[in-house]
Image (cartoon, rainbow, N blue to C red; front, side, top):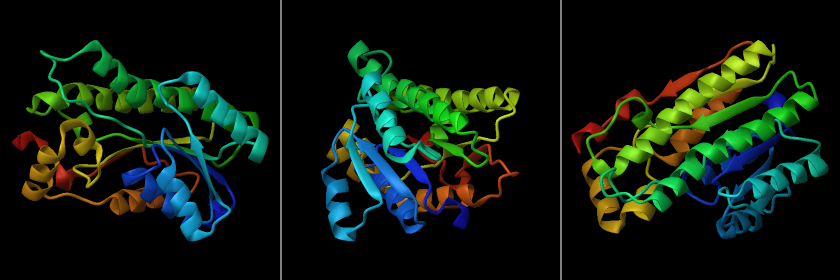
Length: 251
């Protein structure tokens, strides 16, 4: 992991849950972390708590392409570019496919699919412009990208995570065609103790979910990312699935 010391990581959805743990782990590994989110209060508290100069919280609404582009431009002007991209941000919804609204579907698509694609495009441009020999893009997907759950409010969310898997493979193929050394990995964890379902489906559902079913922690996901980043440049982990926590089909 020493080769990443002093490198720049760009983490989306960093103001809590999995994104916060990823940010902490990357800081422990001595990377500079540009941590973006629509809200940054917790990130600013973490920066004060750690008294670190390597954490750079940025307010970015991922539903707006121009804000994402400005964030990457800031990284370019401040550091020269990005070395690692962690596309972690994701949102869920409350509705089924039968009673869903276009506004909810657009929000989920904007964050889970479009923003991920914009960040990947901008990161590749930054990495290729500097002819990096060691760079990595990691997408956070879900075990719901590997099947369709029986619980209605998960259906549209699951579809976006299937899209993330396809986008990961498509990006890998395009980079291979360019003979680019940039590595691309898709991580599909099972149930993780985070706030995503509380935010989308409410406290009662969240409480029932985590009291009824086993889960992994955000720190477990951060450890997986550390493992993936620790692989040598000639090794690419394309898919990483937490198969022991595929439990959503019980709903």
